[in-house]
Image (cartoon, rainbow over all chains, first blue to last red; front, side, top):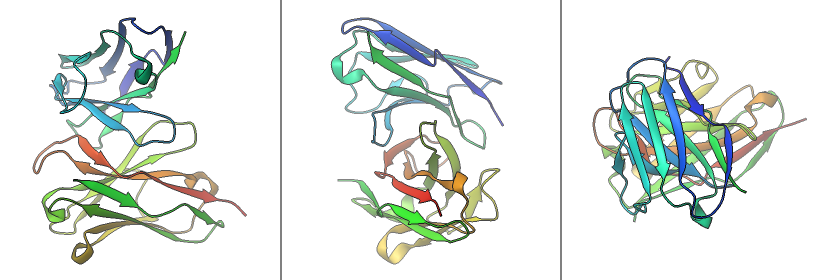
Length: 107
Length: 121
């Protein structure tokens, strides 16, 4: 199975900050990577797919980049509603696998 | 609009079985693969596998063979997850999640609200 290493596991940031989360795949996955946001007690929400394509309705302050093994999710100016846990997921090769998650907390 | 509505929380004893449901609204049920994802308390997301809603053919991830069964009732646009011989470590939230696209490798665009299963004597 492809392992996805996500970092950091948590971070503290302030509203307005630029935040970057990274995922590294144990082997090349082309651009078959998605990012999800999950708030406590809620289901995950698809933010980005194909590494850099913004899902409909997702604010443009979210962006994704990368291909192959290294990927980045950037939140350009953190808003209060962005405090949540973020997961990346590869869908290049079965079994689909997720990163361990990054909890974005208020500083 | 597209919605996946899952059945309510379950409290079961070790050794029992449980069948969770995921009812789809707002789209053609048989056009999109349905996935199941587990989230243990305070933990991350774990993909359990998927079921082809057109053929009914399930695919299970390693670790989810034997006691876990995916099934369908297309007449009511519903997917099911049955877990038998429940263990304490099966306690988790179980999500159904629809593939974003109709063919090939796809992320998940719609998720159910999750069903909490608690296994305790």
